[in-house]
Structures are given as structure tokens and as C-alpha cells.
Image (cartoon, one colour):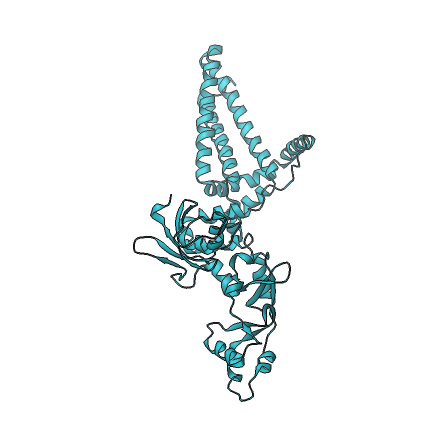
Length: 416
């Protein structure tokens, strides 16, 4: 060593610090890669992404090679520093040069490259893969031996070194990804994606039209009444029953029957022969399953039944799509904003729709409508003019219809 010029030793020391910085930055960059963005780049045929993905398939080998190179560079740098110190300052300078080397390694070979790699992981990971891949082949026997010993130690400690290194995102994690997408996904599309994620947690009961609002045909009624109901109906499909809505036996498509109504022999038997099969849906069926059933059965309409087989409500494909994309019209007739900033709300509106339109966070685990939520909170049937504070919202009941709350005034200025 005494014959080697000091200039060459200093150049070698700088080179070793650069090598150490390369391995430190490469490690951080490769481990900080977004796995889903990486997969997208791989599908697009990006060569750097393809190499990085191959390296990450065996993280034990990748880390083994990186640490092998890093340790080699740092240990050799320490040895060169000792030699330089002895030639320049003697044994008294070893402690000082060791401190200087520690500071240099910390700043130039650790903190700086790792910070840069954390901020620009793709750029550094894809570039460094050009060097790491051939090094992996060159030093494979040494890396294999190091990994074998390390994996054996992990097994003794009860860990599986070849286990899954990256699990799929949960629903809540996906919600966070969508919500944090910012300008990359317009707000209206973010809301749609979040609504799709919510389909599994919501059931048919959350979106159905309640039993008392179902428009249906009683085949035991007078023929003139039935004809008048068909002519004035705003719906294209109506359930048909006898005596009770629980005894529904078919679905009438009004476009089919309107043509036959012009015939002189039109009667109730004609209606009965024109009925399509009606589908019954359990009240607790998740919405994503309902969507699959509608698609499989080529259906757009169903009656919701409880555990006793009684009809609870009605649900259509339009209701389901509205849950995903929101209202098909810009304004909701159930929610009318007043000039003073208050809202006049139809109490039969579902809490999910009310939250979606207003941005409120009323609970949806119990009662499904605003009427049900207020009655559960008061524990009795209120009178018109009753005021209450519910979940930091000031509500005033403005209209009742029998035992049902029909209309509620909500003043947001008194919320909070």
C-alpha cells in the first residue's frame, strides 16, 4: 500500500463512496416503486419496468445483492481511509478520519441518494436495473449462498421468506386511492367509483321504493278503473295482484297491453295472458349481487320480500344505476333548497340519497328513511311544528300525513 500514490487512493475512495451511494439509492428506489403503476408500465412494454418487476419477484435476492455491494464498498472505503490516515497523520489521525468517513458515508452515500430515490423512484429504479440485472447474474453464487443462510435463519424464527410480498388493496384502501387521485380523476367520476365500491356494503333495502308507494294493478278492481290506471301511469311496467300486494302473480308491460286495449274483446283475461314473470328479491341482498342477477336474468324490475315472503318494496335497474351515477336529473324533487339557505325535504327520502345530494353524514345502519330516523330518535309520533336537533342538524317537522312525517325543514345555518 505504501507504493500506491495518495492521489490514486483518494480517487478509489471517492469511487467507493459513489458505488455505495448507487446501491443505497437503488435499494430505496426499487422498494418505493408503486406496484400498480409498475404493473401498468409493464403491460405497456416499458423495458425498465419489466426489468424492475423481475428483480422484485425475488426481493431476498435483490436485497442480498444490494447489501453485498454496499457492504463491500463501505468496508473497503474504511480500509482505504485507515491507510490514508496512517500515511498522512500516523496513528493519531485514525479516529479523526474515521469520523470524517462516517460523516461522508452518511451524507453522500446514504441520506442524499435515498432521499433522491424516494422522491423519484421510477427514474432511479429503471435506470439502476440496467446495472443490477447483470450484477445479479455475475454474483449469483455468492448471493445464493447469502440468501440460503438468511432464509434458513428466518425459517427458524417462524417466517416464510417466500411468502406473498404484496397483498391486494382492501376496499377502504381503494377508496383512499380514488379519493387521493385529485385532478387525475374528475370529481363526478370519483363519486361514481366510490359508489361502485359501496355496492357491496349496501343492500336492496337501502334503495327500494317502499311498499306503500308501489304503483300496481289490482286485477279484482273494475275493468274501467284498470284501463284508467294504465292510461295515466307514468311507469312502463306495473305489478299485477289480486286483493293484496303480497299476492302478486305477474308483471304487466304497458307497451304490450296498450295495443290490445283497442280491441273490442279486451278484458281482464287479456291482461292476465299478457303478464311477464316477476322476480322476487330478498331484502338483504347486496347491491352488487342484484346487479349480477339483473344481468343474468335479463331483468330490470323486482319485488323485495322479507323472510316471511311479504312484499316490502320494489326495486328497478334505474334505482340501482341511480345509486352508482347519482340523480339522472340535476335537481331532486325530494330536496328543495329555499332562498334563505334552508332545505325542504320529503321525509320519505332515503338517508343514502339525502347524504349523497347534500353531503351530510346521517347514519344509514338503522332506519333507511328520514322519517324512520326521526321517529326512532324521538321514540314517538311527533306533531307538525316539532323541532329537534339530530346529528348537529336542526330539523322542524312541517307536515304530517297520519302517522307518517311527510315534510321536514332543515336549516344548515343552525348546524354544527
